[in-house]
Amino acid sequence: MDQFDGGQGGHANVHNDKFNSSSYSKNDILEQKFDSEDDAHAFYNAYAKEMRFSIRKDRLKVDETNVPRKRKWVCSKQGRRAKKHLDRKDRKRPPRDETRVGCRATFSIRYDKGVEKYVVTHFDNEHNHPFIEKRCVPFLLPHRCVSDAVKAQTKAMHNVGVKTGQIMDMKVNESGGYGDVGFTLKDLQNKIEVERRVELKDGDAEGALGYLSARANADPLFFFKYTVDEDNRLGKLFWADSKSRMDYAAFGDVLIFDTTYRTNAYKKPFVILAGVSNHFLTTIFGCALLVDETFATYTWCWKP
Image 1 (cartoon, rainbow, N blue to C red):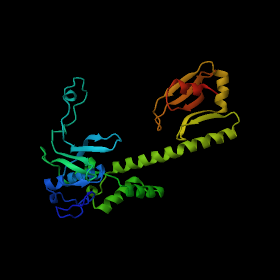
Image 2: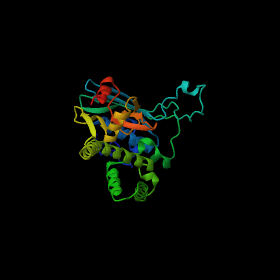
Image 3: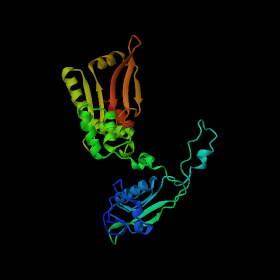
Image 4: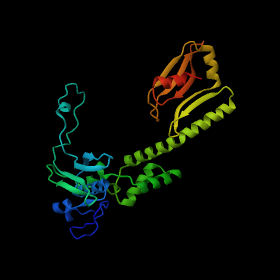
């Protein structure tokens, strides 16, 4: 982003909580130039935080290579709720409080090939609503962010047994209060959960195949098969142990093909092949984790 400080040519740190919006007149903001869309977003979000309102992304125009050419941001109170949601006759609960009041505050940029930067094309800071109290600003969604440094610190502390709530208390003490942390306990928990799922997905395929291979070495009748995609990632997976195969030989006249569609952590169809024993008890003949529910995939599942 171009350096600027109240028209004197200094550097304006858009990520700094102490961003001073009073240094920027409307003409100053219209003269800003940015290296990327992200820089423009950071600038306007910092401005909104200082002015005590929140923003959201609106229109985007990209070129043939999917590179942003135009972007527009609006106040979070822009627009109004559609009447069809307010006039529903089948509503079982009262509607939520209206949060959009038709605010017209906007901030727009476009890519200028001449200077090879994003320039501001429109800026309107006339709001038709009061700004929120200063103590509430840090809890607006656009102004809450768990940094990479905090995520790394949290992961390291988890590894030695420190709980998320204790980590949050520590960050609050370091910052001097909940309003200065920059995120909530729920934000921190959500980030940790996302990181945990990524780690599980990266290692689960190798772990699963290793476990099935060990079972096959210990049980001569244990059977499993799998496929990999073009990116060498695990695709379809089927397995059945010796008891399941013997039960199928004895009670496989009637087969129940049950698919629990995308209710697992991997968002893939999990298939159970089941039947009924001579004691009228449910018995499992085999299990499969599939990539989809196409005819070809089910055919693969049935073939030995």
